[in-house]
Image (cartoon, rainbow, N blue to C red; front, side):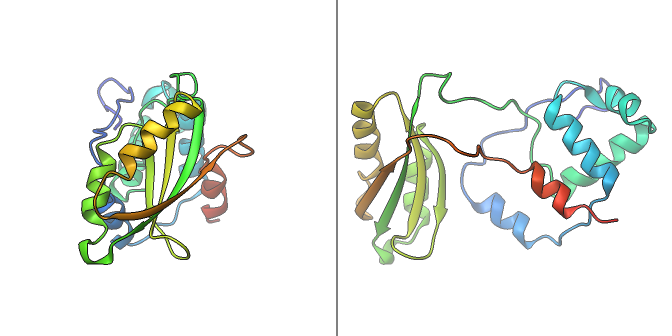
Amino acid sequence: MINLRSGTATAPDSSHTLPSNHHAALRRSFIAIDALDASIIQLFAEEPRIGVQGASRRLRVARGTVQSRIDRLEHAGVVRGWGPEVDHIALGYPVTAFVTLEIRQAGGHQPIAEHLAEIPEVLEVHTVTGPGDLWCRVVARSNADLQRVLDMVVAHPGVERSATTISLAVQINHRTLPLVTAATTG
């Protein structure tokens, strides 16, 4: 969130690890963003510490305009947070793997998602179509440590089978700014 008084960005509550918040965002109506919205998002992505007043000066618009645009983007769920971007490799987890889980259908996805949310090395979990039911992105300190992480992932009795693929290199990092540009109207 952006603090209007100080003009500084603060990290949001990151306790929303389960997909319920994401689904709530999907139920909201979509909003159109314009070039100013896109410029604000781009500027804060490039310089997260700039603050509302700094963004106002840089973009040559009133501080109140920047603040109201930020509030609108946050309220609509377009901007979900202003926290730091953490590099898991620099944090000591250089191994990335993708795990596809097949689960018992009787128990549903939620108990397994809750189990996976308790494992710090699990960065993402998605319900998917095709072979498997859940897709997870996990990290580990080494290939040997990956086995420990996988053992924790499959420890839930609802997991019937898993398949793991280790990432060798990142070709494109997770990104959303090109979508901002593509979604801009006018």
